[in-house]
Image 1 (tube, rainbow, N blue to C red):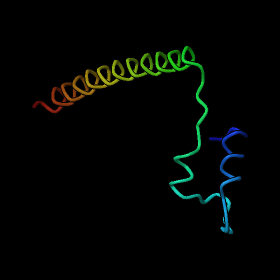
Image 2 (tube, rainbow, N blue to C red):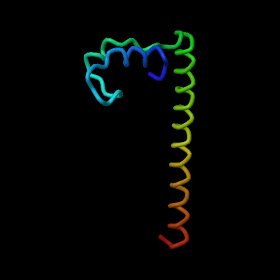
Image 3 (cartoon, rainbow, N blue to C red):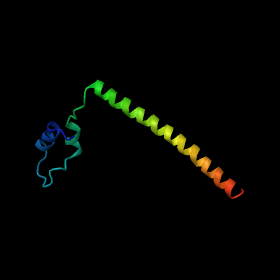
Length: 79
């Protein structure tokens, strides 16, 4: 949406408004949003999926260490 093509399309359809960044839904539906090539899109998705897997593994590690901390606290306090 930051591309010149998109901005030019948006500006050419704004009429009678004092605020340039406001456009009707009808105008926005007519504008085409440029997309990267399909191979680039697949690379982006693959990178996001790799990062999501890393986040899930970190969540598992956090849960393990939280359990260990709770167990150690219980041991120290004689619970």
